[in-house]
Image 1 (cartoon, rainbow, N blue to C red):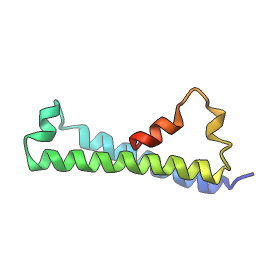
Image 2: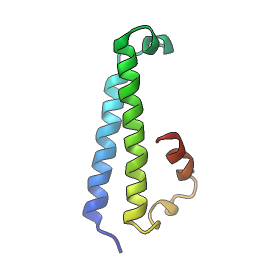
Image 3: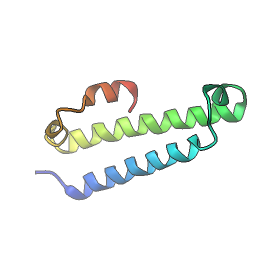
Image 4: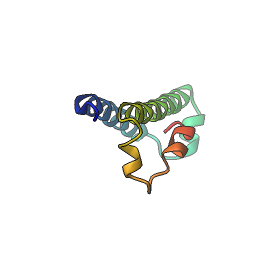
Length: 86
């Protein structure tokens, strides 16, 4: 069995990261918004960091649950998410 509090904390981290991604995307309307200014590139960098954080959090959940929880959802290709940083 695994510690539910740890899993809930990690899920809170994932929710926070997703919220940050949504906030940072609000002013983005096209790909060029990321590339045409330093501010846009900073937004892209920060969104990428949050995606990496989500991927790492999923790995922590997998480890904390001895690879039991995520495999309960076989329709999701977890390893591909990790490889992409999410």
